[in-house]
Image 1: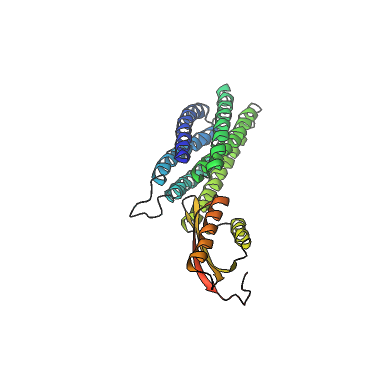
Image 2: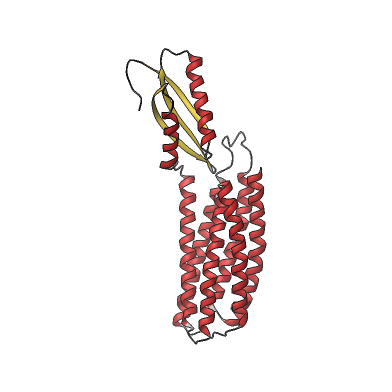
Amino acid sequence: MERFKVANTASILGIAGNIFLFIIKIVVGVISSSQAMIADAMNSASDILSSIMTFIGNRVSSKEADEDHNLGHGKAEYIYSMLISITMIILGFTILYDSILSIFIKNEYNFTIWLVIVCIITIFTKMCLYLYTNKIGKKYNNLLVEANSKDHRNDCLITFFNLVAAILSLLHVKYIDGIVGIGISLWIIYTGFKIFKDSYDVLMDKTISVETKEKVLEIIGCHDEILKISHFNATPVGYLYQVSFSIFVDGNLSTFKSHEIANKLEREIERKIPEIYLTIIHVNPAKVNKDTKK
């Protein structure tokens, strides 16, 4: 399936790019004793783990439905996203602690032009990865790829402030290095919590958005033969949704005719709303002398 193939490609590119960036960041960070650069390197380390989790999660979620998993393995995508978020939160608090210490405990900071060079290389690399993953993440509605895309975008901003800290160190404003480290850690923590919430919502079967539900109701409203609907439910299955509801039609219609109405409506909803992959409609008879349509 194309959706999973492009997600795998995005994961592999992310792993390769982040390994390269981690190596050059950690080397330059240790040599210069830059807390901001070391924090940036640890951020790249978390990105490596995120890309690996994306790769594994994508492979698991791409498996077809079987006897034990009738609705497929789509939720694996969100389980691995949650693991990524927890790792990011733990890493963020660790960096936050070290960055705060670096402000109050005077560290030897040695400026080197390599700090600037590494920042520029990182911004360029991450921007390319962001543009690629953002495009395919939105195209295929893949939370794992979108999470990586946001991470790449955030890294560009983080490294920009790292670059500012390196330049200001030439003016002997060295406490900025620790402040940037704090900023990076807080951003990692925030992103981690956001990914956790998005994953949690799906795993806890959060229903479709109000906007999507209104689209469904609008489609139903165009069918005059449907007098009433009830018991509307929506369940996430991976990155898509399954919806079910009951419709009431003229009780004088034949069984074939009433179910034909439901079958056509199911196909129409699935065709017009991409995020809904399965529609299940139960048909009930209604008296035609009462306008029970909603």
